[in-house]
Length: 107
Length: 130
Image 1 (cartoon, each protein chain N blue to C red):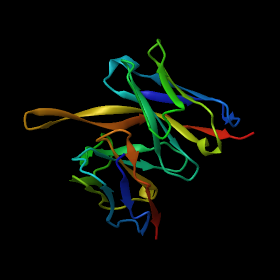
Image 2: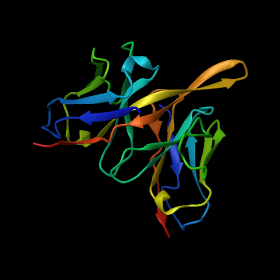
Image 3: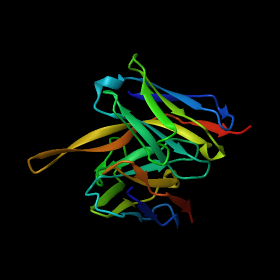
């Protein structure tokens, strides 16, 4: 099973800030990495697929990069609706596995 | 627009079998090369992939649950199901169905696909308690 380590587990920031969340796999997963946003009480929403491809309809302030074992999700200018939880997920192998999540909080 | 909706009992007694249905609309299960998936999330916890089924009937289950899980399809091509046997309190969670959709990309002359969960149901809370 591929282990995904996401950091930080929580992050405080302000509206307008630029923030980054990292995800590390315990083996090479090439670019088979996806990012999701989850608001409380809702299902996750796909933001980025294939490490760097913005899902249709997702604002361009979200971006992803990385390959191999190290990946980053960046939000270039935080908006009020961005303060929620983010997960990474690998699709290189089965079982599919997720990071433990990063909760983005308002400072 | 593809939509998915889970339905289930809400409350299940320990040692019993949990049965959930995912209703798919806006597409048919056999019309795409997707994997139809179940994922769960304990209260306040992370996401755990349970398993998936392809329209050709192939299944893959999380080894941690494999002995207790069955995912199946309906011949109507618009529903798929989860069965989880011998439940305990540790199975209390919000259960989501989702579509694992292949996104095609090219590496030189090689065609690849990266799968991602692009459509989700709203989730249904299942509590295991006597």
